[in-house]
Image 1 (cartoon, rainbow, N blue to C red):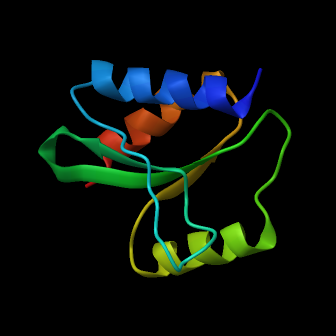
Image 2 (image 1 turned 45 degrees about the vertical axis):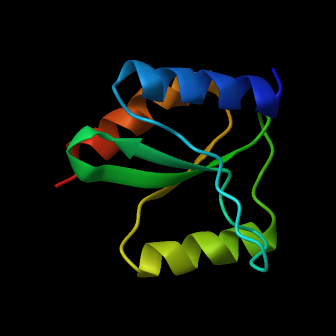
Length: 94
């Protein structure tokens, strides 16, 4: 299973829940997460995708910490089985 495959499954699952998951690109700021997940009712989170067993690089961990310090949800998904649970958490966050 590749990172690209997991990413495609995430995008499809978000769409099925009525949301979008645009690619997140930030010129001049390396290490940002791969996708922004936007769900109905203003729910959002950042998602970094990895191939199974791969971990975030130190700069990616730094960006995750920065975003979380601002109050945003940030997830790292390395398997399709995690997608449903992550989307449930985003949806149910108050």
